[in-house]
Image 1 (cartoon, one colour):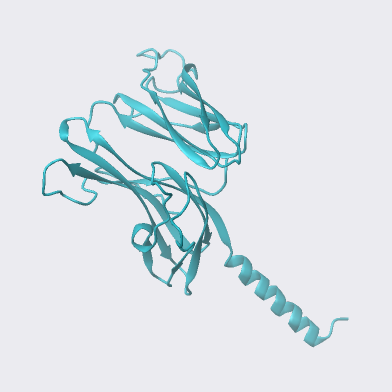
Image 2 (cartoon, rainbow, N blue to C red):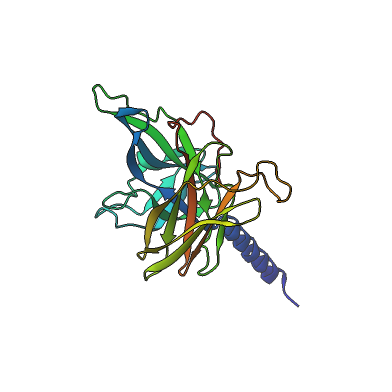
Length: 271
């Protein structure tokens, strides 16, 4: 039989183990980047896309986020790889630390080890760069919440990106692929119409190791009938599949062809 002291020791050990599990960290892959591009209806102004992330510590103790890896380059020498958030406090990545590759590109991926009590939002803030002075700084065109990934997509298994359309608004798709492997990856990208899953367009691209690349696949109008007699979706619905021969992440940006960009409505996707 186990004595009372041994039983107490075993109980304490189990409690410590339980606390360790509850305070465990998890992988999070965040999309970031810095880029600019011209406005369609104003040749004197450029959009500026700036990645950022928000971290909120919902626990009663300080929590530390660790940078595991970054794609598309390396950090500046001497950059810390940890960020500590105090209990009940919120911090943004851009105001706290510079986890960006050198040189900064768009898009790129940062792989973080995040304690379970930290709530995270990954985002793109959209500002303007006018060709006349004075400039009007800040993300005055809005912001977009970005997906946060918890695991890599296995090699040779297609990732399905549903709803890569803007309904009846003419729109093009940009497909980003992050190759998490140690050798160059081959990616096969397909655009399908939803009504009958027919193939509209496909491309094959290569991505260097530990690198994110973005590929435009243009605009291809679905050929579904205006009044569908058969089919399982509306005629404007499309989706994209991405198959990569290395562990990977992918995502699709759908952008209107004829309308300048302003984001008047956003849904937070904090995790």
